[in-house]
Length: 412
Image 1 (cartoon, one colour):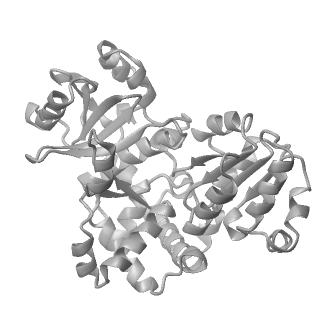
Image 2 (cartoon, rainbow, N blue to C red; image 1 turned 60 degrees about the vertical axis):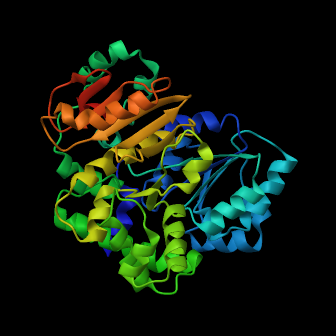
Image 3 (cartoon, rainbow, N blue to C red; image 1 turned 45 degrees about the vertical axis):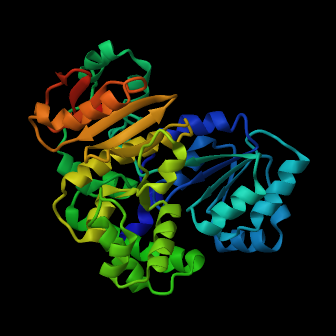
């Protein structure tokens, strides 16, 4: 599958995370960037600073030296970028020793396709020494060359009286959400491949690489067939609560195996488990999460679907929110469900404020579409900002008291 290998050959498109990484490199001796394969980590870190020595552990010679004489690798340059660090986790111990001897800001920039082993070793070896960031597939605005996520910062920073003008003045043009969902945010299919057939071939190669290389090397998955069946089942349930018992029964696996596979998918940046909002943060850990995928187009491919559903529009919005949170701003994304059945798709909690968001595929939203947002705002009136009702039309207007109806493409 040749298409999968051209990821590092596309022209550099500025990434939203770039500014955050540059700032972190001025303060921390180690900066770690993780994310699923093919999100553009290698391209990003090579672009950051041309004066840094860049070494990839995908290079067999570099990997051999890292495994046999790691201190020699680290001594090659005063500032070093090590790509695909998960291929030699013991190298992290050498990084720790080097940092403890000389704590120089920006000395090491590490990237890795996250996995259980990598995250455990990093947290143990580099605690207090490193800043951690996640690179998601490209946001819609990154694909458009705007180097940004949605307007989440602006919404939290602006007074509600300015929201209508803020959203109306956004420079983005109307987009067909189904086309955006089919293209997704991985750089190669989003920027280089114009045909659905070519994109399908790329995603097939991606899944094959993920299953046959990453999982076998680090996760110890016994049956790739079972694992792929589980991925398909999850992608057919986007936006739904995770019922592990039902999921196990449907895919013919034990519940502990399903739990273990879901954890692997999450740590390898494929699965997004969205927790439920509750004022008591302990309760958030107990309540059942919803599931989404890191990329809508990949989810469509894994599910064998050709036409996006409403959950894929939700996935687009959530992926943008997660990319924004990935800069380490401290925000959290959740969903909300009341015991009486009312539900809100997303709740962003940031600086003790709550932004509730409902996503609809309708081009003409009605007051009835905002009912659950009204319930949420009444329940949390002291901390809730005005709510967003994202729709597929063109108009921006206050559909109810404290609820702004806005085109999704004006916000993300």
